[in-house]
Length: 220
Ligand SMILES: Cc1cc2nc3c(=O)[nH]c(=O)nc-3n(C[C@H](O)[C@H](O)[C@H](O)COP(=O)(O)O)c2cc1C
Image 1 (tube, helix red, strand yellow):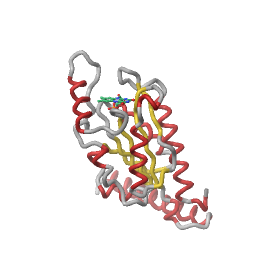
Image 2 (cartoon, rainbow, N blue to C red; image 1 turned 180 degrees about the vertical axis):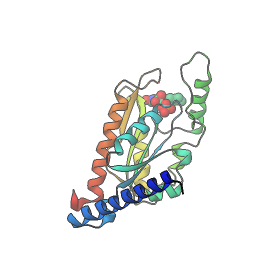
Image 3 (cartoon, protein in one colour; image 1 turned 90 degrees about the vertical axis):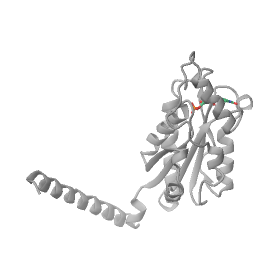
Image 4 (cartoon, rainbow, N blue to C red; image 1 turned 120 degrees about the vertical axis):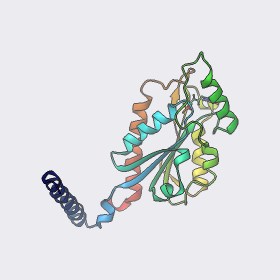
């Protein structure tokens, strides 16, 4: 092993030991096992055609990182193993025709993005499956959960809200919602309104705090 490698190796072992010490020391001082101190695992699953829900999901993930270890995945990559490992499941998608997208509405979105006279472009994972199918069998029913959507900036009675359907389906699968479904708003050109990404980050941070309380009620 080269000299620098040896030095690095020693440093990493030192840091590892310090981390282990701090974990156990802190846990013992607070009268709980080190397992409790290890942060919660949050999984953020999103569907996105034009990228708005992707941006919002990434901002929520940033906010959650204040309290959780976070994995952010498009719905096509949200495999059962990831879901089973999550303490908190946060799921969001675009509002299409007042609710969750369908194969037909996703096709219409892809067609709209393909037109020359548009600023719209397709998200890298836009051709994956939709949340509607994934939500047939999303979780093993133990996770805390929350739902969000993106939609037009108008009264929900006119726009619909995909997050309501997402929340309902998560509940049907036994998840416990820790916040009311939330919408993040776009204009009629499908551009996220100014300030919405920052609001999504704050929402994520608040979710993480609420989930920590629900996860460790005795230490809240
Ligand atoms: C086919 C289609 C149907 C839509 N239907 C609605 C709707 O009923 N209500 C609404 O508020 N927005 C509707 N929208 C707008 C989308 O919800 C909005 O553009 C959203 O931010 C798209 O998210 P994405 O960029 O992640 O795909 C629709 C968009 C498309 C393409």
